[in-house]
Amino acid sequence: MNDNDRELKELMSAELDGMATPEESVRLRRVLEQRPDLNAEYEKLGGVMAALGELCMETPPPSLKQDVLRAVRAKAAPERGGWLGSLAAIFEGGLSLRPAYTFAAGAAMGVLVFAVLSGNLTGRAGVDTRSMTGAMLPLAGNDTYRLIGSREFTLRQGHVLAEALSGREGFALRLTADVPLGTELVASFEPGDWAVKTVGQIPAGNEVLLGTGRLSVRIQRSGQSQYLLYLARKGTAGSPLRIAIHSSDGFLQGELDTDARTSGS
Amino acid sequence: MAFTAGATMADGEAISSVRAQLLRDRQALLDLSTDYRQVIVLRHYAELSYEEMSEVLHVPEKTVKSRLHTARQLLGEILPKHGITLT
Image (tube, rainbow over all chains, first blue to last red; front, side, top):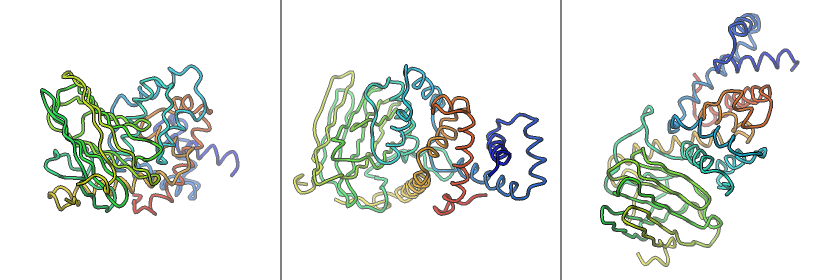
């Protein structure tokens, strides 16, 4: 590919992203009329753009872009691959948030990760936005999950039910909460023993953040909500999950066994 | 007590279907190498401009454009393999 072709390909991307100047657009149109090979490539790229817009992802919150930029700019000497390295690690199944990152970085990361990984139900085509009731459990893959233990946390104004479910592919934690606004639910686990497969919340609207060995939820809308955390076992160890609840009522915590053989259920 | 999608309530099947679609779409992005996945996520989900992506990635804007172009070309091959139709 010569420099001219390379420039034309960059111009195609700019045009598709709406970032080409009017002069560049005219120039590209003229070239495409004369180059069927490039025209075919341009049309295919248009198809990719359309497909990307239709992928089943949660619509990122409007603040995501600002959160990302604020996070990057707040870091005095950002390291190449640091923030995005963490992002990539998360995409690949690991979680490696650097502890020195600002809260904004963590928030942006968490939101972005949640947007990409979660099965959150939003208003995209074919997506259900109804509230979860009963014992519904969206499943990762075709696995069947069995309830192996549960623990109920009772607050003065509300309650949280934490359930441990075991499947062939791993373990799932289901949190069902009806608690005051501002309550924070934290599920922590040993990252050496567990890898996050996916996360979901129903209905959407509460802040869900993923960190190393930790899922935290801040309740921002009233009513019952449910959170699902799917974990894959990394080794033979099945260390317990720790649940902590911080609310205006106080602080509650407890553990959930993840081993079906010892749970006694 | 066992839970299976669709067995506990009618919504289960619909939600399971959405989840399967999500996993498929996520897997399609995972087929891209890190450099290309980064530009796709930053452009399409964080909606950063080229200039902002250049700042985040610490590479020239020209590199951002080039990576985006290549990433989209690769997705043109990857997406159909995951059953995602290009229109």
